[in-house]
Every structure is written in structure tokens, then in C-alpha cells.
Image (cartoon, rainbow, N blue to C red; front, side, top):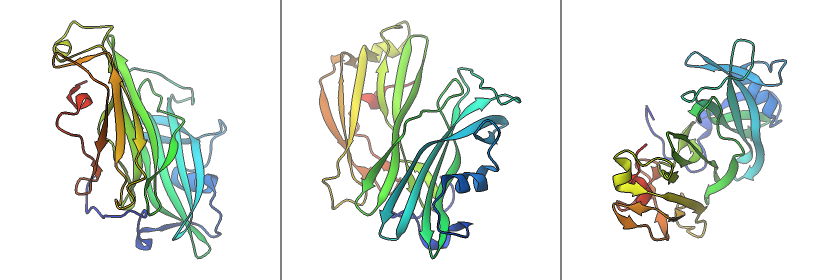
Length: 259
């Protein structure tokens, strides 16, 4: 992330807020009309990223009461489309995600953290069915999901945790969720890893002394890592406040996978 990084757990300070509407109505439509322009006849909000057109739709809109006011957590996803607004698909073409946190202040709904254009996914489609999760004890909420893909018999995924960082949205996760190369073992990757490895992630909200909760990731599977059989294990990944991201241990098995 570029520019000055602000340590914030409760989203951002009010000085960063941008008024959206005159009334305190936390409306997803009002936010998206302001950010992307009017909704199209196809029922989505058109936008472009790096010359590619997308059609943005609401994936999740959740309201939460917080210590500083009522908030709307809005997550939208967009498929790549052509000039006629029809969906297009190509392996290297990503989908698009937009994330917004809106808070009610003095009778106005204000955008306090956002990123309207986050490239993610493949074949022109983004990951969908996001989950809003509490990532810290002081109203620090974010969106949880996985994304991934495959190529030449190798399939993989990694975790995504989107959350406010200053007045922007940052991905707090930088570690893989799974891989499976049982369909192709003709390259050097198979000298390090073979088989199918999966994992599950749980946010450890019992650590109330932490400003951002650690996560517990249980790794399971039938694969090998550096010639040794993988043993199921639950790992605790602490949060690195300087980098604003979860830290992987050096012997983290999924951390050795290159795609």
C-alpha cells in the first residue's frame, strides 16, 4: 500500500470520512450510485479497470452497530463484460471486487474506508459468497473468502481477508489455502510437493488482548512436503502490525508452494 499507513482498528478517523448522502440512510444503492454512477438496465453498476469493463452487483450488504455509529459493510463483485454488457471469459482475465465501509455521522452517511476496484479471480469472474467476520475486539470487521484456480492439472487456492486500513481496504491474508497437483507431476514442483493438501481457517476471537485476532489454520491432506509425508496440524498465525498482515511461520507447509 502506498502513502502513509495509519494504524487503525476501528476503521478510520472521522477526518477521512467522505459525505455520501444528506440523510442518515445507510443505502447500498446510494453508495454505489456515488462511486460507480447510475445502475444500468442490466441491474448492475458499470465500471472499468485497466481498460476492461465490469458489471458490479451486491454480494453482501451487512449493517452493524458500533461504538462510533451504525455502519454498512458493503461488498460488491463484478464479472468482466464486453461492449454490449455480455459476460466474457478468459483464463487470465480476473474478476473485480469492491469493498466499502459506510458510517452514520450527525445525520449523514459517510464513506470511511473503501476500494472500488480490487482485481481477483479468473475467467472474468470474482469469488462470491463473501462472509463478514469480526477480526478484532474493537469493531474491526472484514470480509473472508478464498480465491484460486488451476492450470495444467495443478489446482490451488489462497485465503482473502479484506479489512479497513486507514481509509483504504487491505488484504490481511498472504498464504495459500490448498493445492492439488495429482493431475500433473511433470515439473520441478513435484520434487517439493505431491498430492492434495487442504486447510480450514478459524479466527481466534478468544485472544481479546490482541487488537487484531490471530487465525488458526488446520492443514490436512495426502501430500508430501520436501519428501516428507504431511501430518495434519493446526497452526496459529499471529498478526504483524508493522506490515498489517498475518505472519506465516518459516516451516509453514503451504508457504512453500509456488504457482
